[in-house]
Length: 304
Image (cartoon, rainbow, N blue to C red):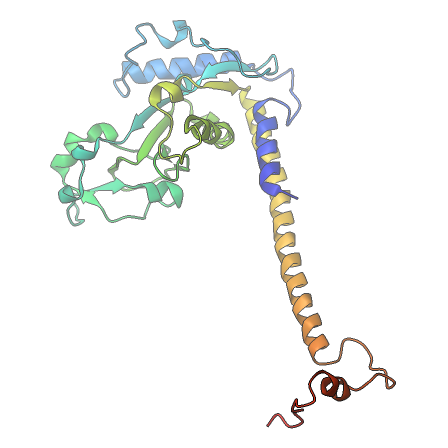
């Protein structure tokens, strides 16, 4: 059983609206999208994010669906783009942040979050810090709790949601910030990310080793099948259930492999000791057979 392929199949069914049944009483995704757009406009009005350069009109009036839907989705769902759902920010250019700028940690320094924070899902890793002055210069790359950081080079597409009470700081060049306009969609968004975006990055690599996440213009325009919020929660619960079962299968598979290996070793050990099958007193002794093979062979009778 290929549990990796089964996991991918479960995620694929989830984003196509085929993992759990639809509930006609759910608030449709079109209403959820209006809430997301309203939250985006609020953040723009408060100066917390900037309006995208190509968008001169408010989000509620933008022609967001400018692509051919890649597959059919339930009627209660809504096709959007990744750009409709979140603010995205890649780390500073290489020359903007180099090791020569790092300083020892003290009460006036700011943390530089690295790729390993996303890959190992741990905000405490790393010992790179910058001064307050450098932080002010790079404040546009500041991270906050609930931000999603994404590894963008080498091991790409690994995500981590920053927990509460993280150290104040910024991301480095190998990370990207994803700041959802509506945090409630976080779980489904991350499941989609795992299901689709890594595959897209691989395709964009054109058969070569993948070294970077897709360009922003590709990333932001990527189609996203948005379910009603309640259905998103049902999808998450179903994924957890199925993945939990697959984990048990994997654990059992590991135990079986170890058991089979142990049995094989024991069988060989018994065979070499003459304990695997009963002896037949009418058999020609091994010493006689050895003499026929090599008359000059020495038969060992004492192993001391």
